[in-house]
Amino acid sequence: MEGRRDTPEQAEFREYVQRWLQENRPPAPSFRMPEHAIEVMTEEQRTYLCAWQKKCYDAGLIGADYPKEYGGGGHQGFQRIASWEMSAANVPYMINVIGLGMAAPTILHHGTEEQKRRYLPPLLSGEEIWCQGFSEPGAGSDLAGVQASAVRDGDNWIINGHKVWTSLAHFASWMILLARHSNADKYNGLTYFITPIAGAPGVTVRPLIKITGQTGFNEVLFEDAVIPDTLRVDEVGKGWQVAMTTLLHERGAAENAGSGGGQSIEDRLGALLALAKRMPRNGKTAWDDAVIRDRLMQIVIRVEGFRQVFRRARVAALTDHPMRLALSSKVLISELNQDMAALALDIEGAFASLYLGDERAPDGAEWPLAYMNSYGITIAAGTSEIQRNILGERVLGMAKTK
Ligand SMILES: Cc1cc2nc3c(=O)[nH]c(=O)nc-3n(C[C@H](O)[C@H](O)[C@H](O)COP(=O)(O)OP(=O)(O)OC[C@H]3O[C@@H](n4cnc5c(N)ncnc54)[C@H](O)[C@@H]3O)c2cc1C
Image 1: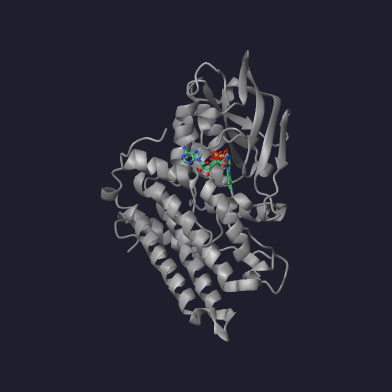
Image 2: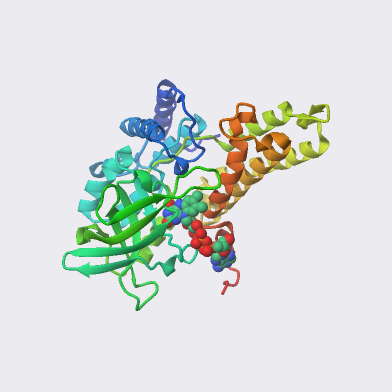
């Protein structure tokens, strides 16, 4: 049972979080909310989610384990409780997902005292949104292939280059940026920066339209953008090591500054089963079809398997290798979600061709949308192939790929 290993202070905090969430759940918005924070597009979605993050932050549910001097709660082992309870309560997710999950832990670990004091509090509260400028047209899985350049000019750096797939850049005040200061060495030629985005001279954010017709990510162009050296994170040439800290958190192998909320896998499964019981098939419902029932049972088994992996990930004795369970979780959940959406489309049959805005579309067309978006989730934060390579090489000790 969740909470069994809580200390008395943690148990008290858990009770407080449960009570607070019950009393402060925000009213359901009158507009559609996307499945993931990285699909947030409109100003009304942003306003609603920023207000929710601020409220959670003020209540101590975000940044709970971060030092007080950087805007945190100054506790230990409280954040995972808050995040767990937020997911269990099925409240809205945090919009500043890149800030909380990647920028905050990276700045906390590698940033200067000044950077921590300036950037962490408004990041935790959601008053400043962050994005991640790692990927480029020629650098994704091979991240060390980054070509965006950072050229030193006295106390400043001049940034030029083209970042792509930059989630949330359209709302972002700041970006964590990986850039190349030297071509002499692939890894040691990289340096890590904090870069202003919104309204910054020399920075252009262009939305990318996805197959769904929606946006969410962008390309970001830097043309002689000038940033002070005080925005460099860690030493010149240490960019690769700093980026590894970011990726460790992005891939879920370490606690972040706050998460939780959104639709749980159990709720999603419930929606899938309800869909099967409702959709007509051969004079009965899809639920009565033996083949569909068999496929549903395979999904039920995988959901239970995932729940067990998730539980095991919180048992210290089973997390001797920091990457093992966390890395496998990312592959498991993203592929499970994809297969659930694919099955939903089969259950819907011809109705699956009805899209957002069509009132005849089952479940408001969320399943065809989820199916298309599910491909992005198997790619973002490291593709399934790359995750499997890492699991094979670093966890199982198998031979390295060329
Ligand atoms: C929804 C979404 C949001 C994203 N958000 C951000 C963001 O905010 N910031 C950011 O910087 N990036 C972001 N990305 C980019 C993401 O990190 C990259 O797309 C990802 O790392 C893959 O890189 P790539 O697209 O260049 O594909 P490539 O690296 O070119 O890969 C192409 C194919 O080759 C396979 N492949 C490559 N190398 C190997 C190998 N060694 N072994 C086996 N197979 C291999 C891959 O698995 C893939 O199938 C986002 C992507 C998506 C889809």
